[in-house]
Image (cartoon, rainbow, N blue to C red; front, side, top):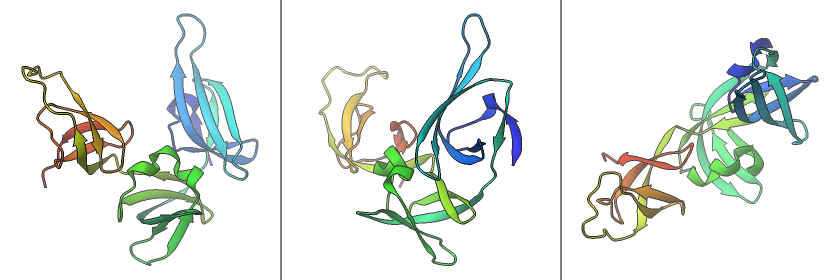
Length: 189
Protein backbone atom coordinates (compact mmCIF):
# COMPACT_ATOMS: atom_id res chain seq x y z
CA UNK A 1 0.00 0.00 0.00
CA UNK A 2 1.16 3.52 -0.73
CA UNK A 3 -0.35 6.94 -0.19
CA UNK A 4 -0.97 9.07 -3.30
CA UNK A 5 -2.78 12.38 -3.73
CA UNK A 6 -6.39 12.12 -4.86
CA UNK A 7 -5.90 14.19 -8.04
CA UNK A 8 -3.49 11.57 -9.44
CA UNK A 9 -6.01 8.69 -9.19
CA UNK A 10 -6.98 7.26 -12.62
CA UNK A 11 -9.58 4.84 -13.96
CA UNK A 12 -8.51 1.24 -13.26
CA UNK A 13 -6.48 2.11 -10.12
CA UNK A 14 -7.26 0.06 -7.03
CA UNK A 15 -7.66 1.93 -3.74
CA UNK A 16 -8.12 0.71 -0.19
CA UNK A 17 -11.22 2.35 1.33
CA UNK A 18 -12.08 1.39 4.94
CA UNK A 19 -9.95 -1.76 4.67
CA UNK A 20 -11.66 -2.98 1.47
CA UNK A 21 -10.24 -2.88 -2.06
CA UNK A 22 -12.13 -0.77 -4.63
CA UNK A 23 -11.55 -0.43 -8.38
CA UNK A 24 -11.87 3.13 -9.73
CA UNK A 25 -14.48 3.11 -12.53
CA UNK A 26 -14.40 6.88 -13.14
CA UNK A 27 -12.12 9.62 -11.79
CA UNK A 28 -12.91 13.28 -12.35
CA UNK A 29 -11.09 16.35 -11.05
CA UNK A 30 -13.51 19.26 -10.56
CA UNK A 31 -12.19 22.82 -10.29
CA UNK A 32 -15.06 25.13 -9.32
CA UNK A 33 -14.79 28.89 -9.89
CA UNK A 34 -14.33 29.42 -6.18
CA UNK A 35 -13.85 26.94 -3.40
CA UNK A 36 -11.61 23.93 -3.13
CA UNK A 37 -10.94 21.72 -6.16
CA UNK A 38 -12.20 18.18 -5.55
CA UNK A 39 -11.67 14.73 -7.04
CA UNK A 40 -14.88 12.77 -7.62
CA UNK A 41 -14.38 8.97 -7.72
CA UNK A 42 -16.89 6.31 -8.79
CA UNK A 43 -15.65 2.94 -7.53
CA UNK A 44 -16.75 -0.67 -7.23
CA UNK A 45 -15.87 -2.72 -4.17
CA UNK A 46 -14.05 -5.86 -5.30
CA UNK A 47 -15.35 -8.16 -2.54
CA UNK A 48 -19.07 -7.70 -3.19
CA UNK A 49 -19.40 -5.52 -6.31
CA UNK A 50 -21.13 -2.63 -4.48
CA UNK A 51 -20.71 0.75 -6.19
CA UNK A 52 -19.30 3.58 -4.07
CA UNK A 53 -18.95 7.30 -4.79
CA UNK A 54 -16.37 9.35 -2.88
CA UNK A 55 -15.22 12.97 -3.00
CA UNK A 56 -11.79 14.08 -1.85
CA UNK A 57 -10.01 17.42 -1.85
CA UNK A 58 -7.45 17.12 -4.66
CA UNK A 59 -4.58 17.36 -2.15
CA UNK A 60 -5.93 14.66 0.21
CA UNK A 61 -4.04 11.38 0.46
CA UNK A 62 -5.65 8.04 -0.49
CA UNK A 63 -4.30 4.48 -0.08
CA UNK A 64 -3.42 2.85 -3.40
CA UNK A 65 -3.09 -0.92 -3.51
CA UNK A 66 -0.37 -2.30 -5.75
CA UNK A 67 -1.34 -5.24 -7.87
CA UNK A 68 0.30 -7.85 -10.06
CA UNK A 69 -0.13 -6.87 -13.71
CA UNK A 70 -0.06 -9.66 -16.27
CA UNK A 71 -0.71 -9.82 -19.98
CA UNK A 72 -3.43 -12.30 -20.94
CA UNK A 73 -4.85 -13.07 -24.39
CA UNK A 74 -8.63 -13.02 -24.85
CA UNK A 75 -10.03 -16.43 -25.83
CA UNK A 76 -13.84 -16.50 -25.80
CA UNK A 77 -17.08 -15.40 -24.14
CA UNK A 78 -19.69 -17.73 -22.65
CA UNK A 79 -22.70 -17.33 -20.33
CA UNK A 80 -20.47 -17.00 -17.23
CA UNK A 81 -18.21 -14.27 -18.65
CA UNK A 82 -14.96 -13.98 -20.56
CA UNK A 83 -12.00 -16.36 -20.61
CA UNK A 84 -8.40 -15.20 -20.98
CA UNK A 85 -5.16 -17.22 -21.29
CA UNK A 86 -1.68 -16.45 -20.00
CA UNK A 87 0.53 -16.84 -23.13
CA UNK A 88 3.57 -18.44 -21.42
CA UNK A 89 1.95 -20.89 -19.01
CA UNK A 90 -1.35 -21.36 -20.91
CA UNK A 91 -3.22 -20.88 -17.59
CA UNK A 92 -6.80 -19.80 -18.25
CA UNK A 93 -8.56 -17.20 -16.12
CA UNK A 94 -12.31 -16.41 -16.20
CA UNK A 95 -13.51 -12.81 -15.75
CA UNK A 96 -17.12 -11.91 -14.90
CA UNK A 97 -18.98 -9.71 -17.42
CA UNK A 98 -19.33 -6.79 -14.97
CA UNK A 99 -15.54 -6.64 -14.47
CA UNK A 100 -14.95 -6.17 -18.22
CA UNK A 101 -17.91 -3.79 -18.52
CA UNK A 102 -18.74 -1.71 -21.59
CA UNK A 103 -15.37 -2.29 -23.23
CA UNK A 104 -16.35 -5.93 -23.88
CA UNK A 105 -17.63 -5.04 -27.38
CA UNK A 106 -14.05 -4.21 -28.40
CA UNK A 107 -12.59 -7.61 -27.39
CA UNK A 108 -11.10 -9.56 -30.31
CA UNK A 109 -9.78 -13.12 -30.37
CA UNK A 110 -6.16 -13.28 -29.09
CA UNK A 111 -6.22 -9.57 -28.11
CA UNK A 112 -3.55 -8.98 -25.44
CA UNK A 113 -5.12 -7.38 -22.35
CA UNK A 114 -3.51 -6.33 -19.07
CA UNK A 115 -5.26 -7.96 -16.11
CA UNK A 116 -4.56 -6.69 -12.60
CA UNK A 117 -4.52 -9.38 -9.92
CA UNK A 118 -4.62 -8.96 -6.14
CA UNK A 119 -3.49 -12.14 -4.35
CA UNK A 120 -4.32 -14.15 -7.49
CA UNK A 121 -7.85 -12.72 -7.88
CA UNK A 122 -8.54 -10.60 -11.00
CA UNK A 123 -9.71 -7.11 -9.98
CA UNK A 124 -9.54 -5.04 -13.18
CA UNK A 125 -8.71 -5.24 -16.88
CA UNK A 126 -7.13 -2.82 -19.34
CA UNK A 127 -7.60 -3.29 -23.08
CA UNK A 128 -5.01 -2.00 -25.57
CA UNK A 129 -5.40 1.70 -26.51
CA UNK A 130 -6.19 0.95 -30.15
CA UNK A 131 -7.53 -1.93 -32.20
CA UNK A 132 -8.28 -2.61 -35.87
CA UNK A 133 -11.80 -3.41 -37.10
CA UNK A 134 -13.44 -3.75 -40.49
CA UNK A 135 -16.15 -1.33 -41.61
CA UNK A 136 -19.21 -3.46 -42.48
CA UNK A 137 -21.55 -0.62 -43.39
CA UNK A 138 -20.90 3.01 -44.37
CA UNK A 139 -23.10 5.73 -45.82
CA UNK A 140 -22.26 6.70 -49.41
CA UNK A 141 -20.29 9.91 -49.97
CA UNK A 142 -22.44 12.98 -50.60
CA UNK A 143 -21.23 14.74 -53.78
CA UNK A 144 -19.51 17.99 -52.97
CA UNK A 145 -18.78 16.96 -49.38
CA UNK A 146 -15.06 17.55 -49.53
CA UNK A 147 -14.44 19.50 -46.34
CA UNK A 148 -11.83 17.70 -44.26
CA UNK A 149 -13.91 18.18 -41.10
CA UNK A 150 -16.95 16.32 -42.44
CA UNK A 151 -17.39 12.79 -41.14
CA UNK A 152 -20.05 10.18 -41.93
CA UNK A 153 -21.47 7.38 -39.73
CA UNK A 154 -20.26 3.81 -40.25
CA UNK A 155 -20.69 0.47 -38.45
CA UNK A 156 -17.73 -1.65 -37.33
CA UNK A 157 -17.52 -5.45 -37.48
CA UNK A 158 -18.28 -5.50 -33.71
CA UNK A 159 -21.56 -3.61 -34.24
CA UNK A 160 -20.35 -0.28 -32.82
CA UNK A 161 -21.06 3.00 -34.63
CA UNK A 162 -18.12 5.24 -35.52
CA UNK A 163 -17.74 8.51 -37.43
CA UNK A 164 -15.26 8.14 -40.33
CA UNK A 165 -13.93 10.44 -43.10
CA UNK A 166 -15.86 10.41 -46.42
CA UNK A 167 -13.22 8.30 -48.29
CA UNK A 168 -13.76 5.27 -45.97
CA UNK A 169 -16.14 2.66 -47.42
CA UNK A 170 -17.49 -0.75 -46.40
CA UNK A 171 -14.75 -3.41 -46.33
CA UNK A 172 -12.04 -0.95 -45.25
CA UNK A 173 -10.08 -1.82 -42.10
CA UNK A 174 -9.71 1.08 -39.67
CA UNK A 175 -7.93 1.70 -36.36
CA UNK A 176 -10.22 2.73 -33.49
CA UNK A 177 -9.37 4.28 -30.10
CA UNK A 178 -10.96 1.81 -27.64
CA UNK A 179 -11.44 4.28 -24.76
CA UNK A 180 -13.99 6.42 -26.62
CA UNK A 181 -14.67 4.39 -29.79
CA UNK A 182 -13.34 7.11 -32.11
CA UNK A 183 -11.76 6.67 -35.57
CA UNK A 184 -7.95 7.12 -35.63
CA UNK A 185 -6.77 6.15 -39.12
CA UNK A 186 -7.08 3.66 -41.97
CA UNK A 187 -5.31 0.39 -41.06
CA UNK A 188 -1.90 -0.10 -42.67
CA UNK A 189 -2.25 -3.88 -43.16
